[in-house]
Image (cartoon, rainbow, N blue to C red):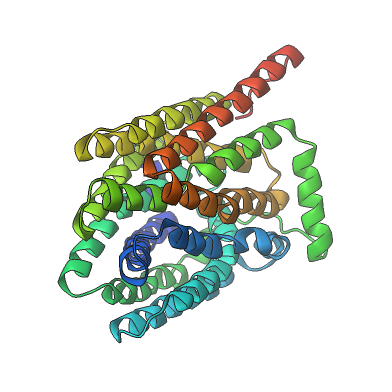
Length: 408
């Protein structure tokens, strides 16, 4: 178990992890409150509206891809993160004030989601690659797994806390608390020991040309292409759990805000287990990606046919393990097999696919949930896992025929 937490021996990573945990709790509080606000207060259980919010929030990952990848490879990463985190904190505070005042409208939530997505688009790739500066390449897979552990531990706390807040004092307070939580991560960034950072070579060249170089780099790598194709399928049609959980909770099981938030926390339990398993591994390999995709498909299928609330919660926990295994493995494999000077741009491509495909998938899944029912929407997610499994198996079969080693 000690090996699973080895990155915490590093002062800079330990400081970063503490600040990130506080901020992650706030982030999950806001996500839960935002979905509940749209689903139950600003609309009458309209899953398509939730899908639109997700599309606007994650769409900038693709829209701003040429600039976000360039910034991650060229701009001082610590200063860029401080700027993006400050902007996201101010947006959360503003949305909270509007909601508490009772004047928030659906179109305003759409605007805030888009602005938050723009800031997050610049923040996400640099936050992913900055981990290597904190711990170095040797402990990178472990640090990535611990980041996911923190994110999903916060996912157990944040939705439950949001559910209590919503029931007790109203939705807007969850947004305000999230805005204040950004102070923790800003403080951790300010107090890092700069002399102990593991600096990597910085890229040169203009933004447009640099991003094209990143795309060419990915295109010439069959292993990266296979990973990104699998990620596209699951991210587009499978990782839309605000829609799945929200519609199942409200339309099928008829729960209140606390019952809804408990489902999100239950899925997070599985995600934490998956993250700890990943943190304990000595190495990461392509086979884990394939297994994660297959189990994800099975978990979504079980959730789709769950006969009651407890069975649905159990299926979500299994899906959480699989989803975390899949996303963590894709992150580590791509970073470790990419040249340091290209990591920012390649990770921007990964994040553009992981988050930016939501504008395609979320409205489609929301439409299925509205017209055919939430269980059929989960069936779409299950199919995405099976399709990703097929892509991974095909790549492995081709690699064996060519005598290639698995990417690791």
